[in-house]
Image 1 (cartoon, rainbow, N blue to C red):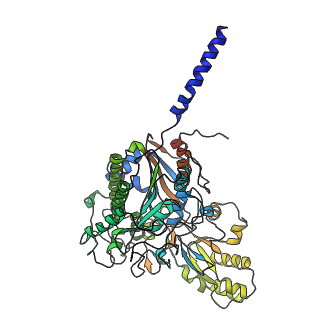
Image 2 (image 1 turned 180 degrees about the vertical axis):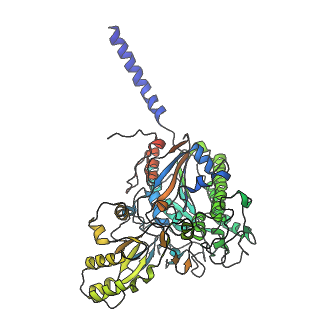
Image 3 (image 1 turned 135 degrees about the horizontal axis):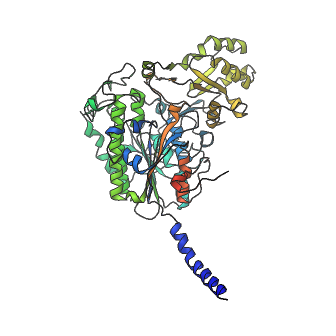
Length: 571
């Protein structure tokens, strides 16, 4: 009898306490999710230069964050828009559709810039890309000033956050690059990017009819002009740098007069390339930070119990990597300055929102190769390739003769896809798949090419299971990919884009291009270093797991258990 009474009492007590147990187990949600993407931050670079970094930036993330040191993308084309969209959606390019910075649109018969959308014009007059001074050749491909996320075919994490909160979550993306801001803010958020034409941050009519007053006020300050007559100088004495004795290497490039050695002078604020020079230096990131701080204050980010989202994509590392290479004095100093920029950002967040209320995630859209000259210095085979001459190769000329095509067989090559002349092929009544395969076989014979695979083979999945073929499939979208996917051998890449010669260029499937850091910090996260293999696309699913919302529609990653506190499922 007493046993029955005791059991009943315990049951009643358990029923009473059960809601409290659930409440205790429910982790508090962050007030802000701060997603930082550093363009071309190869996974080894932060720790390579950690010696002279302070306490509040990368070192804070390394010591107090969950740092994944073995994170790699699994798609073939490691370019800016591809990586940013993969981070945003948790999906491969084969699902999210952003297969390249630029692809050939068969319907319009022209190259399409990834986020171009002629329906939504830039709000600032005269802020469009100035093709006479623009050195970012992908942006020069755009035929209008319109920008929107419409080409992203699946939802992003930030979209899902907006949907789950019925639009109450404030969602923003900020970057020097338009494609760095638009992709991360998704379809439901708002994006701002830097105009080299005006020196201010701009947006398009997709997001606003008119700018909020605070944006106009910030742009009217003309903070970029504060660098008129100044220069990018070394932060420390040269003796403190790993590459202090290597300030002038043959493989470094002098792009539009920026110079190959310190100090890199910006010139007068009215100069033709003044704003471009700022983006080639740590100043681009510093201006991005200042605009982001103004946004946080004006938009009341992180001020209530509804989780907000802010993406900041820092772009200067990418420009420095292209011009000077990752093993350069410029890259070393740039990362030391980026470390201080991150420290200022985290300090601002801590003061105004609280790091204990903020979930920080940092990663990169891709890594980057060493400059061939640097590789060859240590006996490593490396070089450049020139696809623009392929149509005149003897093998391709022989194919033209075989197929009876007297005109250009290769219509266009824009990495990583080659586009054939469909009109000429159709006129001769030829089988497109047969021509694709024949061209692929010949291009495979060219020095520097590791893989040439036809779209037909990818579409039919008629390929052996290999590392390169899996990367090719992850990058293949039937409506946007070209007739052939071309992947170059390790340490070989294109360096000539529209006459601008780069020291190094990412875009391949190799470890140096796919390797990026993945770090979570803030909230109650405790520091860990994790060496198992993960993918950057795991970030989006991890964030949805933390928030308890549905994943983005194309996501295929895995929740990172060290962050969500989820135990590993045993098979």
